[in-house]
Image (cartoon, rainbow, N blue to C red; front, side, top):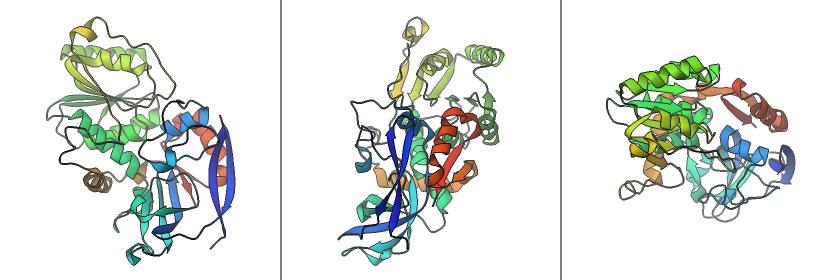
Length: 338
């Protein structure tokens, strides 16, 4: 085993460093994990990379490693690795097991046993690394409550959008329509059973707006583009008392949202969705453990490893983030492989 761990640090807007730290021995109650792969969250991590983090709120209030809000900082929340050493008081069950952890990008990390999740034996590491994003998709389903026979629109087919489309595609909906500007994403969405269109092609956009207006609008619209102005498109697609679920995190970005006219008369329900908590109406019966059980099952059904479009070493991080920033059309899901 190497004596040094590699860690990815964001030191400023569009500035990255790979730092080496001595690998510590796990203390009592802790595990040492050698990472197999970690997934880049193209939406959230682009806010970190571009310097668009809001200063007044933690990156994630529920994850200990994501509390820091200023540079230099580590980021990442989807790592899968093998437990190679355990501290005193840790059950031998963990030794040699693959685990998922909400950890920043690094080749090794030490964590308490309570903060890792055992990966089921039948799920490969490159599927398990999608646990966080699939949990987000499951949470979006819970918050949107799609009903049999509804017309559902998903705006944005990044990885969370694609996973959500995969889940929605299992339901007997009357219509599942998704929008994304990039052909590769639309191609994957079609494979998942959705009708697709490019919202930046005026003819296609008008055709979909006309079609939905003829049936009194969509019942449920998900906004997952990361672009605040897309809320106006969601409103255009809505009808009376339609549900708009905002799954994007905009960071410091903002845009005018037009709530006058039909939007006001239609009594729209605009719901903000965040995976760090359980929907209040479910919290009496659901907890994170139950939601993770469902998430693992959805990973088995969807096989999200098919969406991996790039695997690279941590030392190539600068190129990978630059590609995500400047050529987002070329990538669906990028992984660091250790």
